[in-house]
Length: 172
Image (cartoon, rainbow, N blue to C red):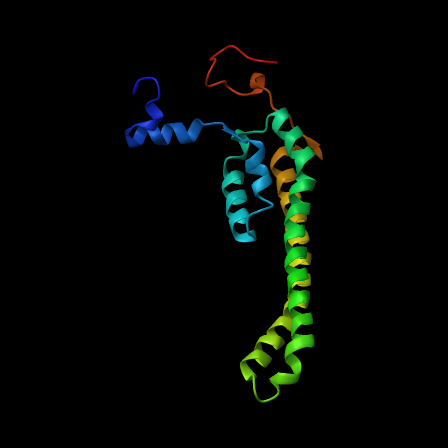
């Protein structure tokens, strides 16, 4: 077992360093789509790391196809979650308007503070949705920087990289 999958067993530092210095990094679809689910700081950290190995990144055609096909769904799903939260906020505000406002004055001071916070949520959620859309545009731009040359996706085949699995056999 150890000889078949040595990378899963303890290895010496020199071997690991050599491996990291020559490895080709291959993305799958979910890795790319997760950039739309993660926060800006995490995404920025990933892109900084990827830029440092940009000459050794490989985006298979199938991954690009699946990513392109599913990207809009992922973004719309994230926005739908914000919309759902906005709807709950609106319902809570209506509840306060109908049932609590007449009792709050002096009697339910904590509820009054909650009501003010609920009122502040709506503009904050709208700002959050706008910020998320900007985040999506930034992810799009950063992915283009990683994988595109002169605005065109650079499809790298094994013939332009050394193939770690097949040696001198190259797939076209």
